[in-house]
Length: 231
Length: 250
Image (cartoon, rainbow over all chains, first blue to last red; front, top):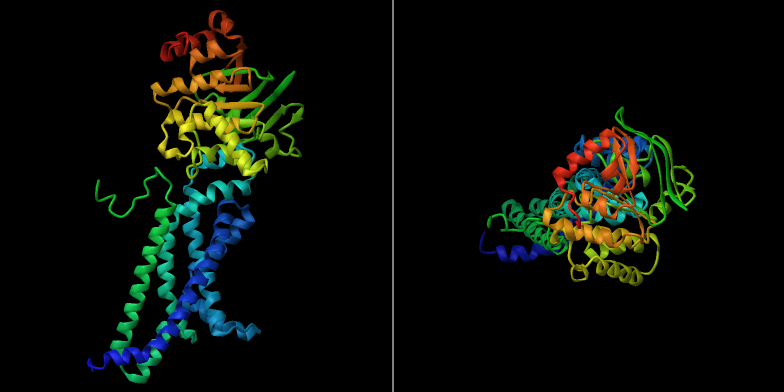
């Protein structure tokens, strides 16, 4: 069995790569759309009036209080009964984006609130309106603070996008399942898939780390790898 | 000509009255110093003037326009009122230069180059041209506060409000900041909340003594220091003088 693993790997590669493509598509679109949604929800929670704040809290609690799988089922299997139809990939993108948005909103809210209120006062005292102050002073700092949490969300999405196979999106895990069901080589197939997820995770963590380092504000001790060990 | 007029301003926080009817006026390019025990509403008064904390009652007028009128464009009017904070509040993510240029870049919509040039001029004025590329966390407290003053100056204000600008500084760094403030005397109106009695005595056109949310007494420094009418003023000045020193030349 081990002898022809190389050949098996090569044979599986096209299907795995196609699945990988869907996984990356799901991850990148959902993290981006979720990020935009998260920013608006977080700003609504911190700066919105009672109505806006209430809406944002309601949305975030609804999403965080229900399983992702249930949300995907509602979108893919439930909505068609009231005449709203999505293709599997559309349903998955929508579900993951809406879900990630709620989680990102909470990370971002924490970061926005950790920017000292004096920063807002100073911006307003220069004559900036609230929106300008948020855009030019609060968000640039809050987003930097949220990078570690965001990195976590990225990895989470990368791996949880595999749940989309249940609504028959042919992403990486789904492709693995097809190959395994066809060849009965479960261990090898899922070992390969595990390695692919692992490599993706390590590479993306490294990239996000580098971005964080580049964006670090000089003089402020955002701990870099090893700096705490030196203390 | 009266530039700033504060008329019967009241402010309370959570049911506690902080300001209980404060009125005073300032002329163009005048320097006034507000002194008084802590918790007496001095900082609140400054924040009421530029509407960072709008007063509950009363009016504030600047150059014949009512700032407290909800119809007035507060953002436009704040450009004319600089604010220097006790704890600096420099924008952490921007260099000293951009801290001082961003108000103009975003507010006055003038070109970036012109905003940078103006910011550089102001940094030079406060003696920090060499630090223009540094971030707040890389500057000393005294340097931070001078960047803060330059940030206010870069907006071409008619009035600068100083909220205990030297209280967060190590003693040896206070002098540089006070020197910069002195150099502005007569060039822009300054309303300064401070415990620096030397500055009050030597630089102010008038000293305002506040206690318990009202102005107890106000007058020229000489009169206040040697011949205050109210016993409370004499007592406070005596005590604060012993604490902070009011030696000449500081």
